[in-house]
Image 1: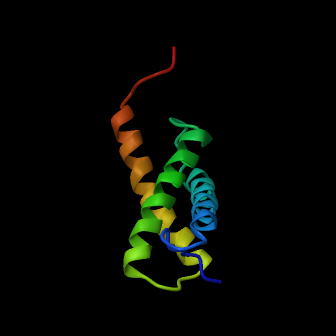
Image 2: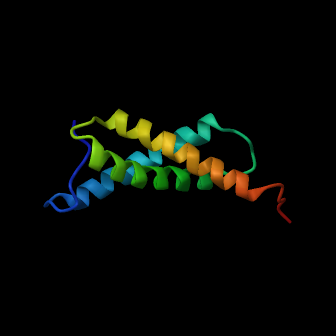
Length: 96
């Protein structure tokens, strides 16, 4: 199954929807892998969505015809980096 759809093509809408799905799967994996308690599931899903968008751009330029699980893997790695940056910038803040 080819995941990547060109934004210039007729199927750009489904390509974007697919990258959102990939990002959400990656966000869920991030939440399952990193259980620090500082941030919640929503933050991890947003990190996964950002990872999915960045992974879509990266893989769109450098890879052609990769499968769904490769896309999830790249989105997961990029999402982990985004999640790490969010957690590092949050510091020791506590909810009031």
